[in-house]
Figure (cartoon, helix red, strand yellow):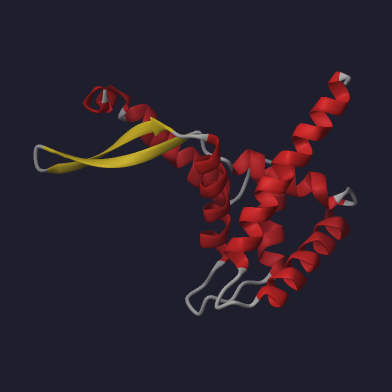
Length: 152
């Protein structure tokens, strides 16, 4: 097996993981048909905006949104501090999908295709709310890195 075919196989596996988690998180009150049509519409929207295969647009955006650290709250001396901890790949996938879903879900839990497409496309270029949230987590982690000793 050549290196290129191995990379394509790995990309397909990553895409499947993100796709599966994203699709499952869209299902709300057992509406699988709605979630499927929503995801198809999202792929169509990404294709129209970027003029590239939506497979790669979705994969690259989710990889860029994926956090590498998790902030755990710990109460120290009357104040709650956030302690950075590295997380597993499965949790990284979950948190990336949660970032996107939480950012675009409004109070009545309605989700629009264009808003998800905006978040994903802005993430590709390193902008938008999802990237700001990821950067905020990394800033807090760098400030509180001296607290890691409490979890050893």
